[in-house]
Image 1 (cartoon, rainbow, N blue to C red):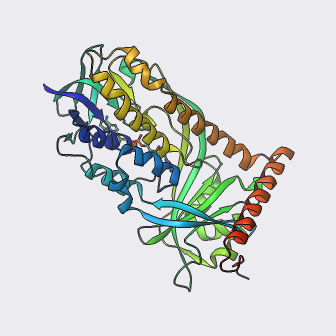
Image 2: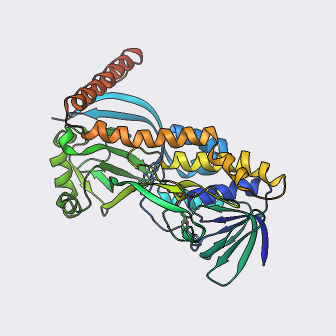
Image 3: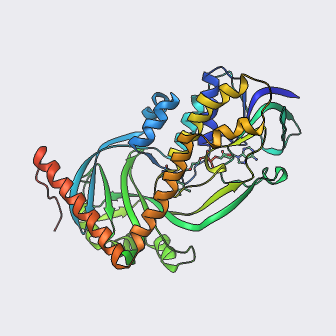
Length: 388
Ligand SMILES: Cc1cc2nc3c(=O)[nH]c(=O)nc-3n(C[C@H](O)[C@H](O)[C@H](O)COP(=O)(O)OP(=O)(O)OC[C@H]3O[C@@H](n4cnc5c(N)ncnc54)[C@H](O)[C@@H]3O)c2cc1C
C-alpha cells in the first residue's frame, strides 16, 4: 500500500491549490484525480481583487496571474448610462486554464495519480483511499476536494442538504462588436432596469483574446426564456437590456451559450476524524455573488498554512483536531459572508416590493454619486460615451 501524510481527492481548484501549497511546504502528499488535464468546464471565469488577495496569501499568485487577462477599469452602467469608471483589478481566466495553471505549480515532490477514488475508510489514526485501479493509499489525513461529486461521503455518514435549489443560473458566451474593431470599454458591468427582469447583472470582461459575458439570472431551469437564449442570445439579451446597446453598439455572439444552474448546499456529519472537506465539497456559493473562489482559496490557505502543519506535529487525527479547521474564525467569517451575499444579492435583484425598489434606486444613486466624484477628482475623457 502506498503511504503518504496527505491524500488529496480531487484535482480541481481546491485540490490543486492544496497540492501546490503542501508540496511547497515539503509535506508528503498524493493528489488523486481522473483527468490528466482538467477539461473545459463552465465555472468561475475571472478573479477579482479580493480573490487575488487571498490567492496571494497561498503564495501562488505569481504562478497564476501571468495566465490571466488583466483589466484595470470597469465601466458600471444602468439604463444605458455609464455611471462610473471604477478602478478595477479583474483577472479573466477560463476555469480549465485556472486549474491547469495551478496544477503546473504543483512541485514534483507531490505524486499525482490519474485515477478515481472509489472508497474511503477513516479513523483516529490512519486513513485508506481505494482507487478504481484497485490500488490503495494509506494516509494520515484525507483532504476531500471532489467538488460537486456526492460519492465517497455517504459510506462514512457525511451528508449534503440543498438549502436553495437553483439559487441562480449563469449564462456564459463570447461576444464581439459588429462593424468595429473593439468595444469602447475594457470591462463593463451592466445592471438590469427592473426587478421583473429576474437578473442580477451582466458582466463583460476580456479573456483569452475575446470579450466574455456572464449573465446572472434568477429563473427556473425549465423557463422557456432559457431556451430562447440558446436559440438567439443576441435577441434575448437586447430584449432583456434594450439600453445596453448604447454602451456596446451592435454585437455578435461568437460562441455557444453555456447555461448552468447552481444549487446552494451545506454539509452535515463532517466533524469526523481523519478527513477534512474543502471548496465545493464542503458547501457551494452563488456564482452571481462571485464568491466560490474566495471560499476555495480561504479554505485551502487556512488548512495548509495553519492547520495541517499543526496536526502533523502530533500523532493521530482526532475529531477535535479536525474541528479546529471548521471552527477557524477566518473560514467561518468567509463562509458566512459568502452565504449572506448570495441571499442579499438575490433579494436586492428580484424583490418587487417597495423596499426592493428603494434599495435598487439607492444603490444606483450612490454608484452615480461615486462616479461623479471620481470624475471630478480624476478628470479625463468626457463621462458620456453612450451611443445614439
Ligand atoms: C456556472 C458557474 C459560474 C461560477 N462563477 C464563479 C465566479 O464568477 N466567481 C467565483 O468565485 N466562483 C464562481 N463559481 C464557483 C467556483 O467555480 C467553484 O466554487 C470552484 O470551482 C470549486 O472548486 P473545487 O475545487 O471545490 O471543485 P471542482 O473544481 O469541481 O473540483 C473537483 C475535482 O474533483 C475531482 N473528482 C470528483 N470525484 C472524484 C473522485 N471520486 N476521485 C478523484 N477525483 C474526483 C473532479 O475530477 C474535479 O477535478 C462558479 C460556479 C459555476 C457552476
